[in-house]
Length: 182
Image (cartoon, rainbow, N blue to C red; front, side, top):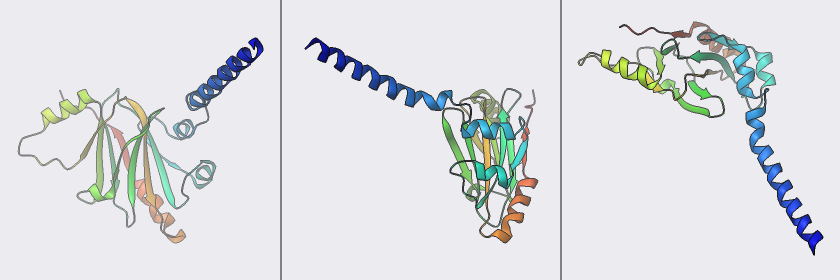
């Protein structure tokens, strides 16, 4: 009977360790998609992801041209401006261990481009205070919970011949840190 109790305790302990290790694996992995994309992009600059690198990433649709901007909001808010494409265009914002926390598509664009400002709560409050009352805000403002992360810009290439146009849209895109006036 005592051996059965030990066996039961061993099975329960092994099960808990196994389940715990499965949940910890994404946090301990150094080769997750976030880490691989982070290597492609310098801080607060846009970097296009080449076709060959795209094929190595899991669950990435090859019909999309991708660019990544690794951001650090410690210097100021981030402004991403992407000219509109003939096809679908989207920007997704992701944080390590949290995944995608916000995204916006070309449907929200005004004036021929998708203009997004990503900021911390303090920066967003300051931007709002600097707004004039009668001024129409044309950019999309997104709150980031953490100061570091990735902005992933995707442009759909609906056929192989439109891939070059999709990549041209990404080359014209901007990802810049801004300084707020005093």
